[in-house]
Image (cartoon, rainbow, N blue to C red; front, side):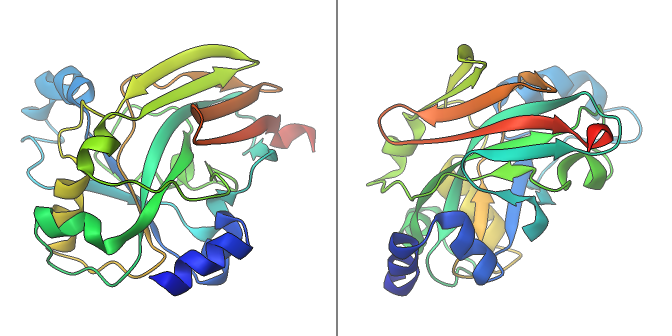
Length: 233
């Protein structure tokens, strides 16, 4: 774990993650409002039941973006959902850990902006919508967290063109940070440098072409970027 932390002190976090081929796993339906909004659909096709395990997706290396990046949307897309989220940065190999052991396996947490093209279904992997180039701006540095309670009290703010458009805390998760890591590690191993995103809040704000966006945790971390159009390149 100390080797990874020393690397991050010498380089920005996105650079380190690229160099060690980190894997990033996101989770949907991990906030109470999203689950409540979808509840009436779970009993109908194609879902037919509520999820019983974390519903994951991936963010491959091409999605990693640094602070002040220019994010180009694919094709003729005109907007993108901006979901401020927190990533658990794995510090040591994590397999089948209990919830009370889970946070001892992380090197820290990182602020990210989980970008997604608007889509309505969670049934099939939203690869095009979530995996376009630059779809995961990552703050430069880690945030050190003492315990799970500290994570749940963090407030994530989203600004578009310097206007606060969304503010939410992480105390409304279906699975807390430690429980999510325990549940995911029950069926797959996570390696040092991997990221596990805690999920996105209900109704993420939409940024349009030309917008300047910032997500932040006041006094601890921020990452900014601008939205461009692929059609204009």
